[in-house]
Amino acid sequence: MRSDLEFIASLVHAKSRVLDLGCGDGALLSYLAREKSVTGYGVDDDSSAIATCLAKGVNVIEHDLNEGLSRFPDDSFDMVLMTETLQATLEPHKLVRELLRIGQECIVTFPNFAHWSCRIHMLSRGTMPVSTHLPHQWYNTPNIHLCTVKDFDELCASLDLRVIDRFVVDNDYQSGRICTWWPNLFGATAFYRLGRQ
Amino acid sequence: MATPKTPDEHSVGYVEPKSVRFDHKLELARAETSLPHYELVYETYGTLNEQRNNAILICHALSGDHHAAGIHRDTGTVGWWDNCIGPGKPIDTDRFYVLSLNNLGGCSGSTGPTSINPDTNQPYGGDFPTVTVPDWVNTQKELADHLGIERFAAVVGGSLGGMQAMQWAIDYPERVANALLIASAPKLSAQNIGFNEIARSAIERDPDFIAGETPKTGLALARMIGHVTYLSEVGMAGKFGRKFQENQAQSTKEPMFAVQSYLRYQGNKFVDRFDPHTYILMTKSLDYFDPAEAYGGDLVETFRRATARFLVVSFTSDWRFSPQRSAEIVDALISAGCSVSSAVVESADGHDSFLLDSPRYFEILRNYLTNVADNL
Image (cartoon, each protein chain N blue to C red):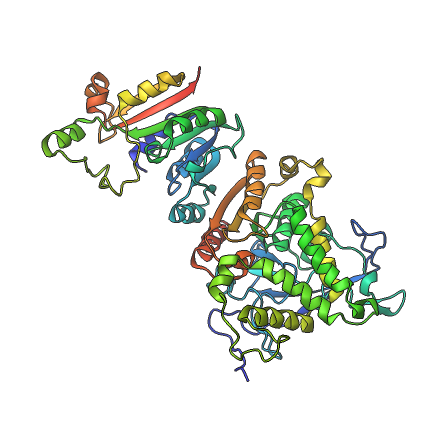
């Protein structure tokens, strides 16, 4: 179990009905089903992700998030999850609003592009940051809409979304004092639990 | 002469059809008349386990029959879904007991238009009562009872077969653990019914049919119309393009393009093995299919009865049963709170894709069913 998924699981209400957008291999959903009696569906458009989910018995719907989410009715889920996927979508601002149309609450996680290691990389090398967490080159990265914690806070404010919880963790998924003190500099990954106003 | 087919290690081997006669009256959902008794022809592959919980029912589509896998020793005929059913194949007969039957109204041995009507001592022909998908499910349930199958591990079908799998999950939720709906639809569109109507007209307007003879021309034409709609534009472009016939046409009556002679061949081949009344019956059954009708037209409400897990597969180039139609099924299942997975497989082979071996399609079936087998 990846520690980021464990972290997300701690934010999900037991027995809730969830939609996991960009579910990948279904690890989170099978963990949630086992540990928190959560039911729901994963959504992905990657064929190997779908094959893996099917082999595990995880419900998965083949769907491209960039086609929008109109097929999912209003209030059809308790929670909508989107882990490390928002930055790879065409219109993140529209998608976030959609998440809260479909679900009462949503959990969004993304890599913080203002992490000190990214800043140093830019400052010292003058090239787009490449790390183990963000391994792609600028020209082939699926992460076309990277943002920072500060950017996302501003987006939530402008869309009038309620930030119920915000955790920012370091590369070891620890939410230490230093991350809390200056999240936009020391946080590697951000976890947001959002609701409607 | 072609070499006779012999079974390889992934074949279920030589198979023989069995048949069972049910000696009770059968009421039919949309027919005024009932059948006094009926017979079903079926084949089985693999072994029913001690718990009797590893059975898979295969539901055939418009022109299918009971011979889904293996080889008939006398004719050398290979089953219509032999690429998918067998030891180590996606529907793995080492793990599952697979049952396939010829549906009521068919023309491959089960009671149908070619059977003798006890009232007249003549073949039923056009007098055979209208049979619909719920009737097939009821008769399939009788067959399951006869074989001691309380609950199917999975009911699987493509196209019209997928409709039967759907109906099973709605009508007998306690008897279906998984329903695999491939290249199917929750009901036909007007366009789709239109294509069926053209095919039926081709048969019904054939002077031979009107005279009570075999409408060879009409049935072949019906098949040609159907066949074109089961392929895709891009698939046909790849297969035939504008290629000319190898032996150039000598007169304007001879086919000039390769696609022409292909369709003529397919049409004529079909006449030898299929009954025109069964073709009409099967297409009407497709047209009538609308499980939500009994629930106020609300598909979500309809699926609330179902307890099976669903797998819905569609193919990108299938325009007769498009991915959009499968998405309607998926969305209704999600809204009904049913367990469902779906995949849209890239393919150039149109509706026919569901019968063909393609790596991703078979991986999807294999992975899903392996998980089913592991959790029996």
